[in-house]
Amino acid sequence: MKSTGEKVLSLRNLTMNYGSKQVLRGIDLEVYQGQIIGYIGPNGAGKSTTVKIMLGLIDGYKGEVEVFGQNIASGDPTYKRRIGYVPENAEAYDNLTASEYLTFTGELYGMDRNHAEEKAVRLMKEFDLGDVIHTRLSSFSKGMKQKVLIISSLLHDPDLLFLDEPLSGLDANSMMIIREVLSQLAAQGKTIFYSSHIMDLVEKISTRIVLIVKGKVVADGSFEELQALSEEGTLAEIFNQLTGFTEHRSIAEKFVSIVREEDGDA
Ligand SMILES: Nc1ncnc2c1ncn2[C@@H]1O[C@H](COP(=O)(O)OP(=O)(O)OP(=O)(O)O)[C@@H](O)[C@H]1O
Image 1 (tube, rainbow, N blue to C red):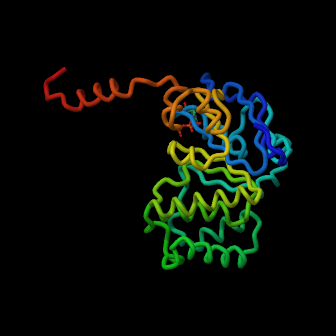
Image 2: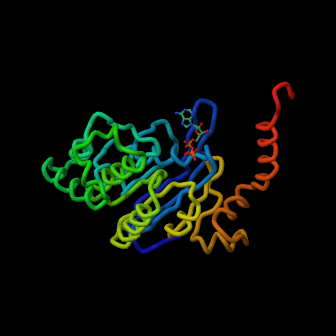
Image 3: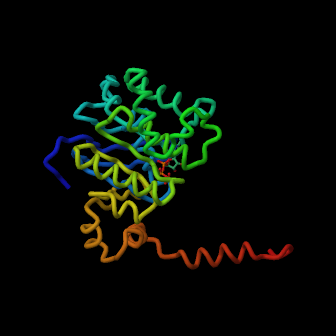
């Protein structure tokens, strides 16, 4: 799917091996400015690996990766300043306060310290974290930490956002705010690469959905295009069909029967 904006990401025949295991098996993908890509696939399909390669966090891949038109293998890391990232499993700097953490990450992205702090405080207040600005992250709930991570990914106003399960732990009201924030950012020309297992959210938020299975793209298009491809209703049902999965009931029955075994049953 093409749009008129700048080409922001380009993956050409991207492959990645861990030892003898091939994790990515030739991914081709072009992403244009303003798109919200829902990057979905079964557990272990290679979604996080793709994202980490584009972020320059994993070496040893084969193929070509361009971000903002620059080949990331050229060794110039300045493209990273235009990127924001919410990782799936964040390293928590639990001993820092929320304000210290955000100021620190803002500075890593090249922001002036005072500017980063002042902006972080205002964003935290918008997210209902006004009372805990100077509280250590170790005492934050999961959802509160997630909000801090989202703020940290956006503080430097990046042009490209990578979000790996970004709404995990957020309540329904906070989810609505973030969904709206992402839509407005995309409308203003930001590009969003969104990886999640929450299919109804991906269905609602994405302008384009890319499904990978075992390291290969198996579907790529708008939700309506995917629907036409599979003749199924919801994105969750399309996902089941395109990943060839029809066995949830029999697996569940087996699982429950094992759970219910009495001591001594074989
Ligand atoms: N550091 C590593 N060393 C060896 N194998 C790895 C490593 N990281 C990931 N893998 C393997 O690569 C495959 C893809 O992992 P990846 O984390 O990219 O999947 P994913 O699609 O993000 O999955 P999930 O939906 O569960 O987060 C998996 O089989 C995983 O075991």
